[in-house]
Length: 321
Image (cartoon, rainbow, N blue to C red; front, side, top):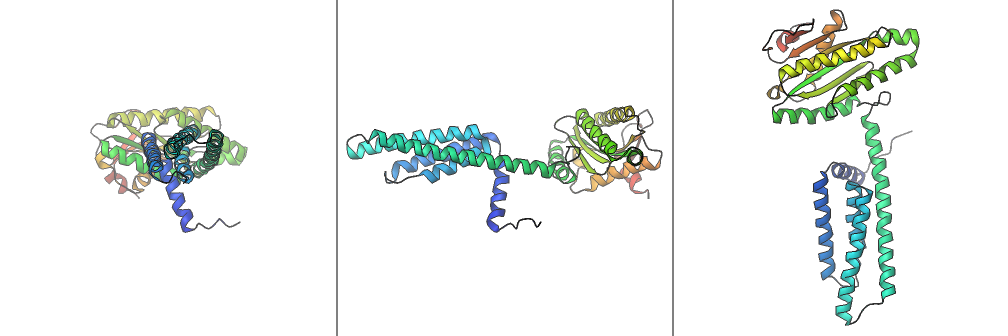
């Protein structure tokens, strides 16, 4: 089955939908109210017999898409009431007498029904859109971010950390002995190990940190911390906790982890950071597995932490085959 071909208008609408979905809530409320006031102002100067239902529908659709169903219904009611009051005042002034009340009630009810239908349709589309975005960003087996979503989110986090001068820890993790689990116990057991590992890892890190499966039994995490010293202790803590969970499975699976520590001014763009953390992880694999290797772009200011974990600079790392 071939994927649908996107037209120019479809691409434009998709881009607008993505941008609108990511607008800050306060900004969206301000924009919605400004558009609503503009519609009322236009209503006050055009021919009283003209209808602005399409304009109000756009405002309601914008509110429903960006703010949700409840906000959409609220703007629909405000639009209908405001439109009815302005129409009543203008007709009364022009005709020197009140309009037919039953007709005005019917017209208002019809406009409200139309705008409510817009809200229902738009929020349904918004839910489907959000579900597709979630499916495109999440690894289907483990429920954590996939590699593409991690790359996008990591760019945002790294840029924010660089601007704020924060320290980040980028870790790449590989499960030692995972292939043997699949060979001896079947793929269902292997899938269960991957899911349990991902669930545990997400529970170890904070909500604002990133965790993703980037392929097979390899995972990556990006954590923002306050200092180099905290970065080292956080990396060791994460490795210890995940190692204990894997050991409790009784399947002989362990975790090799490489952790690249960077301060804000050291952060650069591209995928080079993940490649360096990956190389640190493979240093662990070559030297015995089931351990953590720390690395920095600049020399460590203090001796290597106790407990067998190793640290080296980028210069030393790149000099290795």
